Length: 310
Ligand SMILES: Nc1ncnc2c1ncn2[C@@H]1O[C@H](COP(=O)(O)OP(=O)(O)OP(=O)(O)O)[C@@H](O)[C@H]1O
Ligand SMILES: [Mg+2]
Image 1: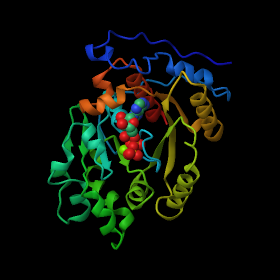
Image 2 (image 1 turned 90 degrees about the vertical axis):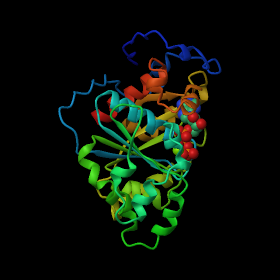
Image 3 (image 1 turned 180 degrees about the vertical axis):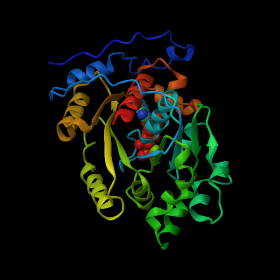
């Protein structure tokens, strides 16, 4: 038996919300439909509203990683971060991809920055407070990066403690934030290993497409090695199904296979494929502020509640 989720009425849309979704249709029943597709018999528990906080820190550090490209790592980092900030959490987003897509997605001209996370990793005396910048989302800050970071990957190789460089860099601010999300690059190279070495948990976005499970074994193997050699406390926080197209059978089948493979590790939140997300990148803001009532914004809020409940 599949229990339908409680229906949340949709508030009046903003002007720009009525545009641009025609390509996929603004499918409001995405979550419900995904739940119905879950024939593995999982219980659909209501995810509680998080309790307000009276003080902040120490931060839970979460790496958003998958070596497969274009699965929604950066989009999920921005929007999960913004949803957590809506719930009153102090959030730091770490752009740990030399492409700088996270920074750009938050409206920062990454290539023009003089100092980035690269300086923090490679220069003695670089101050994290000089590099962290606020975003337009209240309670959410950004540690930006740009192409300079690609040099760090090469330079770090010869350093002692090369896997702990990011952990050392963010240590001074752990007490200031509730959640630190690290947006990893699509590789299992030294930068991603640095993220896994300092994280309490990994969140894995997985696109609902054929072949999405390819490469997951390698990712699991890497997590295993990091647990054994660098960070015994590293956990898998969960697997997030992204690029879900409720109109195709195949995307439902893929999600079903993911659930069969990973069971309760799979978040109930499902991120539908919609042009809203590319739009938000152009707008330089999260979907939670760009289209606050959209299905995408609601899904990332559900994800935020699940993350806080795990
Ligand atoms: N749910 C979605 N529906 C439609 N498009 C999406 C969705 N999520 C992300 N996108 C778009 O897909 C592209 C890739 O997304 P994103 O950059 O978040 O993935 P990524 O895993 O970080 O990629 P990379 O591996 O290159 O870092 C972007 O253009 C983004 O706007
Ligand atoms: Mg990315």
